[in-house]
Amino acid sequence: MSDAPSKAFAQRIFSGIQPSGGLTLGNYLGALKRFAVAQDEGIETVYCIVDLHAITVWQDPANLRHATRELAAGFIASGIDPARSILFNQSQVPAHAELAWIFNCVARMGWLRRMTQFKDKAGKHAEEASVGLFAYPNLMAADILAYHATHVPVGEDQKQHLELTRDIAIKFNHDFGVDFFPIVEPVIEGAATRVMSLRDGTKKMSKSDPSDQSRINLTDNADAIASKIRKARTDPEPLPETVEGLEGRAEARNLVNIYAALADVTPAEVLGQYGGQGFGVFKPALAELAVAKLSPISAEMGRLMQDVAEIDRILGQGAERANAIAEPILQNTREIVGLIRSRK
Image (tube, rainbow, N blue to C red; front, side, top):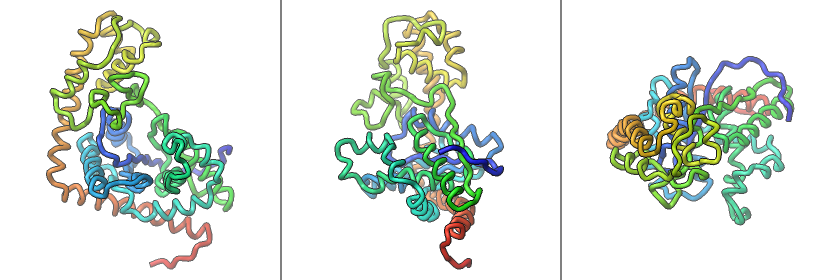
């Protein structure tokens, strides 16, 4: 669908992460680090632990509760200040589920059938997948539009879902003759928004990889971090002096990108310093940098997880602040659609 003219909406960033357990370096560089930086950009930031998305596939209840709290700890340890950003878990704000149902009635079946992530996750067993897994892009749209968010940091693999959110907003506005929902903009940036496996530079770093050596977990201690980087797969050639020289060298590119993202420099600057040198020089430097950046996060996550009542309190306060934004938007949506609900 083509974009429609939109009124000026106050800028607000929204993003969410599933509490599926096992935060990695990829989560940190691709999301959490950027979320913390966004707090300093003068735009309201709303960050959500999307536990309703998590249950689109079966979850052990105790594991889900632990993963939700651990993710909250990861947010905070990575620099998210609950006083400056809104941090909460999705299921505590009813507007997400109700707005998702309204969007179920706006979105078209054909749109959802084109979602490649459903095909990837369901595979040959699509008929056995939950309705929630099929329709969860509509819930994602509700997550974003319940706050009239204007910008959403996403990885490339989520860009298609954000385009669906835009289509839903455009169709809703068109169907009801309003200019109510913003046409959200994706924010895709950074040298390592897609961090790859330390064992195979062509595959995304993932907590589901059978090899723990393929990833750096945010709960890893300094020795584990350094060891994994030293053992990361590389090739026998020295680092090139230009970014173009990384073409066809997936593992080298991945390590250079990780260094760049951790150091807040460009890959070209990394190669300006290490180009022409072998991995015997570069890996120890990367290990030292990674330990310096990630060990404090691991330690703080461990400290926070010793007091889950405090984590629950933080999430509860965040949910109250989130609800204060979402409920009026939901009430206006109900009125636009024609649903009657008394104001209290």
